[in-house]
Image (cartoon, rainbow, N blue to C red):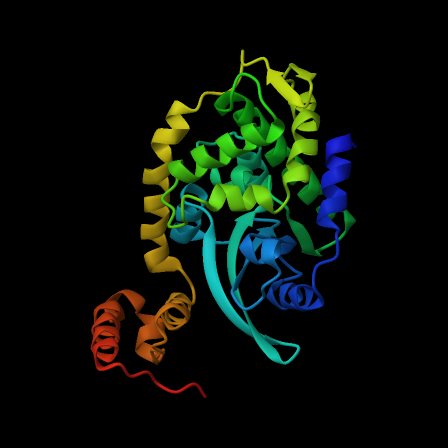
Length: 304
């Protein structure tokens, strides 16, 4: 086991809040799942009142037939859940993907940037089928770190402190995707664990075969032989728009997720009727008109 895999395995095993682990156990399907990873903004902040982000890694493809074919091209499958845990409701957005596909994307063997750009960030393994699956998850996350570090060398300055390379990476990857976050999100990601990123960069460069010089707190990578960025940059937004279009028809719990987002940002609580739950696309115009009318009237349904 490499030093990087050992480090990532230790990070993944770091203690998550009991409520998060309990939620992951409720979400897991022991017959099909290999591991569940917890990542994202609520991990950085510790604020569990928002939507918790999970990646559910399965042993085999999640779907069969036409849905399975779509999943293999425009992964992952996404679902939204509201679960009562320890006396309060926790909300989870769950991306489901076969572990083998996750590993392939983490290694940079696809045009996708989302896996390695996210899982170079702090992550916790909050459920696993066993030690073999835990090691496989650590190896995949280590691959994501190596891929991200190689692109950081490509996109960063000729010489500079380690954080300059990571900031360049996150600026480029966020810009390449169709994302709604503010332009300051890369700085927020860095600020949450700046020392960690500084330590990881030389380890990942050595693991990924990137030669570099280090002097006076700065590093200078040899940029020869690094992966190209242009094609991935051009593919980023179209790929994510295609995923959003797919999610409009396949996102399980989309109506409940949208209703929660609307209530959080406007104070207006829209009822999730059976029709809206089953047909979110058809119900969207009516929900929008109701939201518009009630905002104009300045009224909201009282919380129960």
